[in-house]
Image (tube, rainbow, N blue to C red; front, side, top):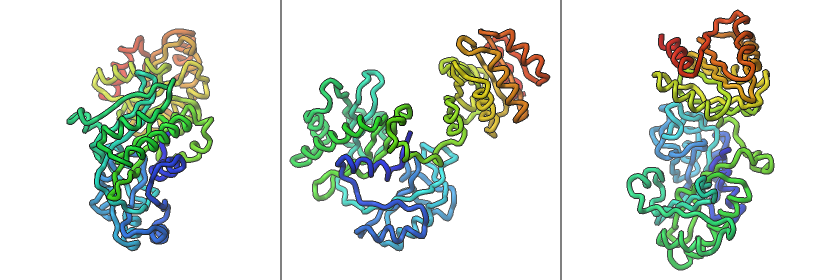
Length: 397
C-alpha cells in the first residue's frame, strides 16, 4: 500500500524527521488561503499522485502548462494559479505510463535554500531478509539511472536485526555522503528515527529523494515516498486510513475485496489461473505465441464458485481484453468448481470474446462435462501450450 508525499512527510515528522511546513489542497479555491498560512517568500506547488518523476512529467491537457508536476511560486497568487492549472488534470510520468494519473490533491509547502541534494532509502532486502540502507551523493536523480551510469556512487548495506540500528550505521552513511560536523550527528539521529518508523509501521520502502543540505548546514527531508506491507495493515489501522483508493486500479481494488491476486497489465488476453507460478508460466507462454497478457490473476487454491465468478467479471470489465484463457491445474482446487464459476459468470455478464479453457487435475472430467453441457461457445484445450496457441489464434485471427 502506498501513500501520498504529504502523508509520508506527516508520518516521518511524527518520528522526528525534519520536513518543510506545508498544506494539502483538494479544491483550487483553497490554494490561496493555504499558501498564505506559510511563510514564503517561495512556495513549492506539488501534484500528489502515487508515482515518481513528477517534476519531469507533463500534463496531457494544454491548459495545465508545459511544466511538470512540481512548480515554484513567488507569491500566494501564483501558487493559487498553479494549483488551478494542475488540479483535475492528468499527469504523465515515466512511472505512470502513457495513461497518466489524475491529480486530485495538491501539496503547497515552503521553499528551501538548497546547497546539496542527496539520496537515502530503506528497503526490505529479500536476499538477506534484512532492512537495507541505500544512499548516494546523487540526490534528485532516479536511483536506477545512478546505478547504471555511476554505481560507485551508491553505498548499500543491511542492518543485522539482532543488534538493530546503531550509531555507526548513521556515521557510515554520513561519511559516505560527505557530511561534516553537526551534520553527522543529524544523520545518526535521522537514520535511527527512520529505521524505527520503518519497523514500527511495517514499511516495505522508505525513499527520500532528495534529502537536502540547506544553506544553514542542516539536513531536511525534501521529498518522501513510502510503501507499506499490505498484509500487515490489519495491525496498522492509522496507516490503513491513509489509503487513497482513487489512486488504485479499480479492477485491482475490486479483486482485493474477494481476496484475489490480480494485477492489471496492458495486453489483450485475460488470464484466470490458480497458483502464482502457473500464472507466471501462462503469461510467459502467451507472449511466446505472439500476444500479451492483460492481467495476472491467481484465484488461489481454495477459490469458491463465487470467487471464480467475480474473477471472471473483473477480467471481462477490462476493455482491452480480446480473449480469455482459463488455465486450471486442480490439486487443492477442483476443476468442477472452476467450471461452475465460469458458467455462472458467463451467464451473468455474457461472453463477447473468445474463451479457451484448459482443465487438468482433481475432478477434471466432471469439470469438462459441466462446460460441455453448458451450451456455451467455449474452446477446449488439452494442455497449456495448446490453450495458449488457441487463444492467441482466436484473438489474432
